Every structure is written in structure tokens, then in C-alpha cells.
Image (cartoon, rainbow, N blue to C red; front, side, top):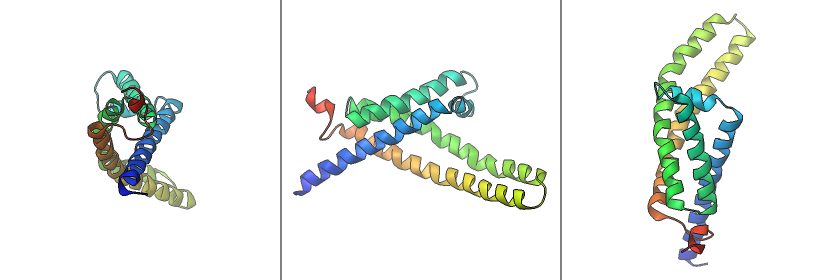
Amino acid sequence: MDQASLVTIVETLLRITLGLRFLYSGLSNVRRWPSAVENAKLLFPFGETFFGFIGVFLMVAGGIGLILGLQTRIAATMIVLFLIPTLKIQWYWLRNLPAITDEVNNALPQGELRNKFRLLARHAYHSHETGWQNNLLFLVVALFYTARGSTALALDLWFQ
């Protein structure tokens, strides 16, 4: 296989995988509603339900667009628009989670329950610590598809 074909296959797999990641996350937010509203509340002093809905819409529609290669540049831009505010949400949790976990930990009785909570708290913090890094990587990949558009196996190519 020549290098140009290999690059096309990898770009296509990357586009589809990114789309699946955001489609799954968006559908997860639908199932866990009003979690998206609670996150939007961290960013917007009013209209949190509207912005929660917009966030889920951007993930689902952007994910579907990337998977299908349909309006790829627009779909990738939707993912970019979703991801930029998530960095602020993760920064919020990295700043506030230690104090919250200390408060809850101190309210628990000594013993096994407190040890289990400490483990859970470490995992929660680690998830936000790596989450912003993951989202930064997703942001760069989405920016790539905003600039690049579709590769092989994309509906965009059929409609040209």
C-alpha cells in the first residue's frame, strides 16, 4: 500500500473515531440529563437549560456529521465550539474538587468508607486532570477536520 493511501485510511479512521466519541458522549448526556444543564450552569449565569441543550446538540450533530463525512467542516466546527468551553469547566473542577472532597471526607467516619471515598476522589480528580488534556487533543483534531474537510468514505465526496 502506498503512503498516500495509508494516510487517507488513517485520516478517515480518525474522523470516524472522533465522531463516534462525540456521538456517544452526546447520547450519554441525553441519558444523564440534566447533567449537561449543571455543566452549562458553571459557564453561563442564565440560560443554562438552553446552553445545555446546545452543548448536547453540538456533540450529537457534530459526531454524526464526522462519522458520515457529511458537511465535515461544519461538523468539526461544531465539535470545536463544544470543546472550547469544556476547558473552563474542567479548570473549574480542578480548582474546586479538592476542597469539596476534603469537606465530604471530613464528614465521613473513620474506616473503610473513608478509604473508599479517598480512592474515588483521587480518580475523580485524575479524570479531570487528564480530561482537559484529552479535550485539548480532540480540539486540535477537530480543528484539523475544520481545515481539511473529508477524506475517503465520506458523503461529502458523493455530493460534490
